[in-house]
Amino acid sequence: MESNIELTQEAAECIGLWLAEGDTKTTKEITFTNNCLTLVEFFAKTIKQIFKECNIKPRVYVYSAKKDKIKFNFSCKINYYQDKRARKPYFIFRIGSVAFTRQWKELVYKTTKCEKFYKDILRGFFAGEGNLKSGNHSNRTIRIAQGKPNEFVEQIFRYYGITYQYSNRGRAYSITGKWNWDKMAKIKIADLHPIKKEKFWRTYYSYKEIHYPNHHIKNNLVNLLNKPYTTFELSKIFNRSHARIYDILSFLKKKGEVKNFRIRSINYWINARENKIIISKIKEKYLLSLKENRKKSSELANEMDVCWKSAYNRLLELQKLNLVDKDTNGNWRLLNSKKEVIVL
Image 1 (cartoon, one colour):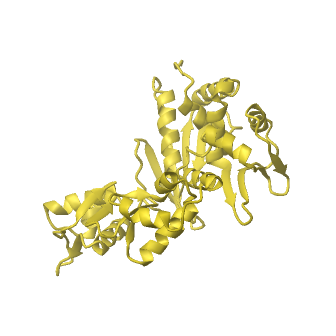
Image 2 (tube, one colour):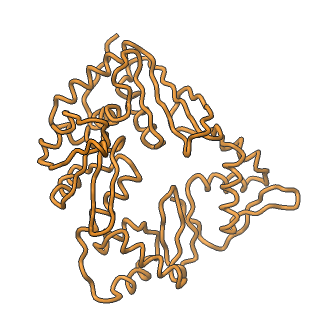
Image 3 (tube, one colour):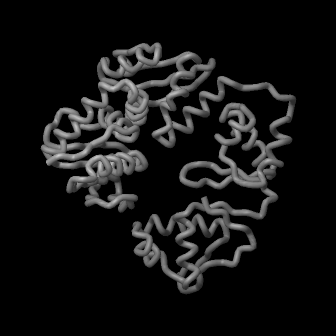
């Protein structure tokens, strides 16, 4: 069984993920464990692309406190299990095959010997085992957890001229200093993980604050927000830290001058005078369904392939926005809103 496997950035990033959080010792299966749905979907789609000429049969095991039926954006066998200790759902991607595992490890060996893929491997490794710490006294630290020193990771650090310290007690590498952050920014170390990416760039831009005249940002923010912007986007526009922009936005929100909508765990800000509502594509599906006729929560849950509680929560969120409500029979119905609905 041969497969025309090519070295790509995505494959190298997945190798970094696997080296960080996969089972590298087994010879019988390819596995990857993580609690970030985006990463698991990326890993699964990339593996299927790598072995596109082969008949692979991947599985995903979903563990959650309430055995949630989580929907994936790729096709494979999904098994759901209950883990009462799980604070948030976590996922195990698995391909059980000695032949595929052998090919995968050959690809891993070949890629780790190629210096041009070092940045991609490190990006994947950081998405799996990295975290960021910022605190008082301008303390900004990039950390990569490792139970013991990792020669390959240190080799990549040396290749990019990154200085580091390893703590046996903390079981992690610590990287500090503006010069190191510049190098990490250049290789986009955190861009594979959505939450770490936002925190990395927020922290990095806090190094580069420009001092504007008093009230410059407050006076210009409100006028700018005639359309939705994230805090990160605004921090880049004004060249100020994410934290500083957020503080100003929070102040303006209390004064009733701006409002925010949370879409996929990201805040979108807009001028409060704008007659607009911002929703996600998932919520849009509920509105489109209710446009046809009134429905109960259970009907919508089946239609969206989610649990009843998940559907009910989405409907409550839409109700708070005055886009839907319940009739006397307990059916949800669409309301005629005079506000413009923006879908992101």
